Structures are given as C-alpha cells and as structure tokens.
Length: 99
Length: 488
Image (cartoon, rainbow over all chains, first blue to last red; front, side):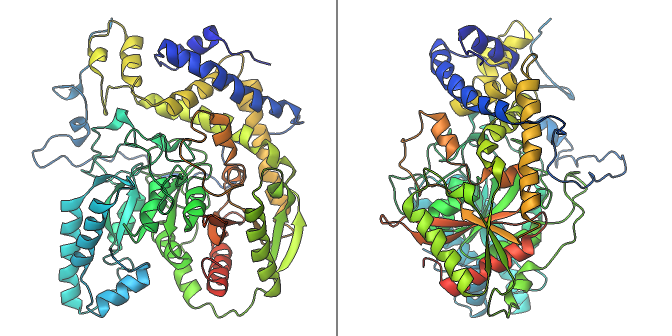
C-alpha cells in the first residue's frame, strides 16, 4: 500500500504546479492517505484481459472538415480572445521573462 | 414571488395576458434580489430584461405565445456558472476565474435562447463542479431551499435551490458523478442527466471529459423533456456529441395515453439497497416500486456486482481527467494572474503562484489525479480503474438484456447538515454511491421525487436507462409523477 508522507505530497504538488502552504500539506497528507487507501480495493478485482474503457459509448467519434473557424472580432475590431488575457503585448499574450 | 411552476403554466399565463415576459422577468429578478440562499453568482439584469422586452414585442405581434417556433418563449432560466455566456462573467465558482468574461456562448445555452428562453443569470456551484454539497464555492455555500441548516446537494446545488425557491422556472446543471441528480433528490425536483454524448459540451468548462454531461432541473418531467430535446443533437463544435436522432420527448409525454405500465420490466439492483441506506429512503423507493407493480410493471431482482468498486473507480478516473483539464488554468491566456506570479523568476513558480487560487477540494483532486497518472503509479491506479470501469459498464449491459429500466435510490440519505462532512472528503465522496455507476457507464438517469422523511426532507427515486433510452425513462417518470403526485 502506498504511504502518503510529506515528501510524496510535495513531489506530486510540484508535478501539478501547485504551491501548498505547510498547513495545507499537513491537512492533505491524512486525507490523501484515506482516499488512496480506499481506492486500494480496486486491486481485488480480476482485470486480466480486460480492455481499459476510456470513453463510455461504443459509437465512433464524429469528424468534421478540418477548416479554420475565425472568431468574429469585437466592435472595435480587436480579438475577443485577447480581451481576457491578464497581460497583452501587440497581438500576443504577455508573460514575465522566465529564461 | 412568481407563481408559475412550469413552462406550460407560464405560457398559459402569457396567453391569458395575466403577465408579460418582461413583467415576469422583473418579478424573478426581484425574488432573486430578496433571496438569501446565495444561489446566483452573477445576475444578468440588463441582458435578460432586453431579452424579455424583445419577447414582449414578439407577443404583441403574434397575439399569443408562438409555442411551435419558440417552445421556450419567455421562460426565465438559471444557468450553472460552468457554462459560458458571451459577455457574461463565468467563474466556475472559483477565484481563478473571478474576472473571466467568455467570448462565446455554450451551445446548450445558445440552443435554449434560440428557442426563446431567457437567461436570468449564473448559478452558484461547487468550485469546478467538485463536490456533493455546494459548500466548496469561492462565493460562499448555498443553502437548502426549505431547510436552511442543510445542504442542497452538489455540485449543481444552486441550480436545484433556485428552482425550488421559485427564483427561475427551471435551470441547467451539469452531472459528472451525480451533480444534477443528487441536488434534485435533496431539494425535491426532477433532475435529468442524459446519455453521454446527447448534449454538446462546447462552452462547458471541463472537469472530467469522459463523464461530464449537461442536465436539467425542473418541477416536472415534461419541462425537463422540453429543455433536453431543445439542447440535444450533434454539434460540429463538440466531436463527442453523438449523431443521434433528435426526438420530441415532450410531445411524446403530452400524447401519452397509457393507463398502465404493462410490459415494463423494472430491474431492482440489490447492491443499491445495502448498509447505510436510510430506512425512510428505502421504504419510499419500495412503495413507489409496489405502485408501479400495481400498474402492471414487472419487478425483476438484478445484480450489478461491480457497484461496490464504483466510487474507487470514479475517484481515480475523474480526478485524473481533472488534473489534466485544469492544467489550462495557468494565468497566461485568461482568468486571474496573481501579483506574485508577475514577479516569479522561473516558469514553475509563475504557474504555482496563480494556481494557489484554487480552493482546497480542487487542489486535493488535482493532487490525487496527478498521483494516479504519475510514473510508477499509472498502471496500478489509472489503467486499472479504466479496466474496472469496463466491468461496471458490462454489468449494466447484462442487466439491460433482462430489464427495460433500473430503479434505485438516488442517495443513501436525505440532505445532510451544512458543515457535517466538509472536513472528511471520503465521507462526502460516499454520498455518490448510487449515482456514480450510471455516470461511469454513460447512461441516462434521472431523479424523481418519491416521498419525504420524518423531517420533511425530500427523497428521490433513481431511474436509469440504456444508452439513448431517454424516451422510455422520461415516459416512465412522467407516468409515475402523474399517477402518484409529486410528494406522495
């Protein structure tokens, strides 16, 4: 059985790009342990030869022509997509220098 | 408070000139303003009044409700805040989307508005639809509409509370593991989750893509039928919508002349009646089943042997998909970017500072999902859960060779008290035991009021049908509703 401790919690949090406070870490450790221990019961099930199911229907996913659909700009002719960006420069999303 | 409980009553009132669409909308807006249930995150006052005045002018021109062309003419609805509406803030009850104003409208909502519906506003919910009590909202918990110390259920808690409290005629919710059916059961409403693939999810902010479906909450089966058929049908913008035939379920219900349930085989799965089931819930479901038998239905005892693994399977599959879907909230393209992120010296810190805005339950599920998909654990958790999921679906396939529909409780208990399960996530997850299996199998399912407990809290009957079997499901629920009355 997997043992949830501080090091595992912080490692997973880093993978998920989540920053946890020390209080959150202490709160989550027993909760994650409890849920994962509950999930452990799946190991009782005989799944040999069972194909994993990732889509609940048996029908084929629909296809459509691969055509670009352009969002209409707003009344001022600006892209609506950029309107929600926290920070914009010209026609792009602006982010702090990170390299 | 507006007194019209259904679409038909509302249309009759328009036709009798008792009230106009804009007068009615104004009444709803006033009722929302006075309510202290905390159901609406955003009220679209100007937008909805403009829609209503437009409806007034159409009414004047036609002299009556254009029921054929606009089956939802002038009907004020509430929309769960997980579905986008162009130009209207859509938060998913999260701080991370506090300022998000989507540039497009969800197909489901667009189709309802095209049929004449009016959108009063955006309804509170559990953050990113993660929860069973509507306590996980960055905008505060939602109260149960009649028992203020209780939860309304989740995650579409406000969608149920608002309809029950008369703050809208009907509403949209979404159901990933029971998020429409559970609140419907707790609040005494009809709640329908259609077949996976029935309704477009374009504009539905994704939680778990192999499970999420748009659903309805209403006072009657007929209203849900009308809303569902209006939203259903393939959408080129969502490749997961099935190319299924569009049916007129509401008409099917209206013209229903059946006087009995002769020939209907109702499967009763023993696994849904196990330990932890409140006695009054079991007896309300039993007495409804007996009534159905007295009307000619045949009761068939069945077994769905993998039911006990449903919650474990769900809490691997759903959280894994969530951890992937919620990776998009990175503070680059939309939503809030925290001040600290602007000062970050590396990319990982940039993301982490913004993603701190997620609430506790969302963080917990992202952590669980990231763990289940991580190297070394993927096979034992995610892959195995997907295999068990197939066995759960197979249980249903075998059952539907012998029965037409399956009947069970929606939840093991009636609405619990606020704060009671907040610190114990596993206890909260266990409330979904009856609703999760149908979600994993992609089946249509609904909650229908079938009684009350000694504290006057509602109990829901759960009906589950085969893939794309909504017609039979709605017809049966409608028959029971008409025959037994709502709160029998």
